[in-house]
Length: 77
Image 1: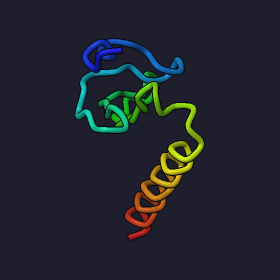
Image 2 (image 1 turned 180 degrees about the horizontal axis):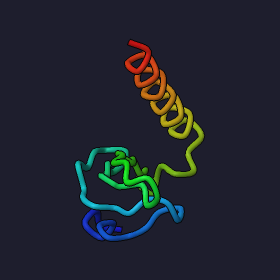
Image 3 (image 1 turned 45 degrees about the vertical axis):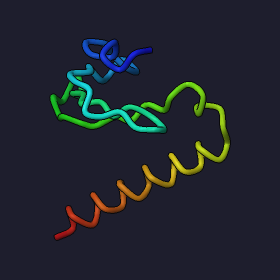
Image 4 (image 1 turned 135 degrees about the vertical axis):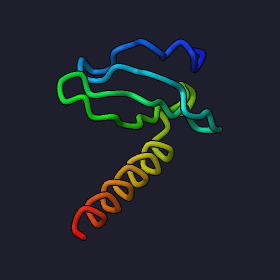
């Protein structure tokens, strides 16, 4: 799917895609808004050729956990 085709779509019944923030070698980063809380979020969607690769999945999960930990650390201050 072309990155611009994500705009306006709903993901997981919770997030409405508002814009494409960037496209890289591994995926596309989207600006979205939680449908119920209105909280803006960034979502990263892996390119199809990487979605089933276990090594890429592990890196993707490690990146998500790093961002989660950094957010929690920031909120602790």
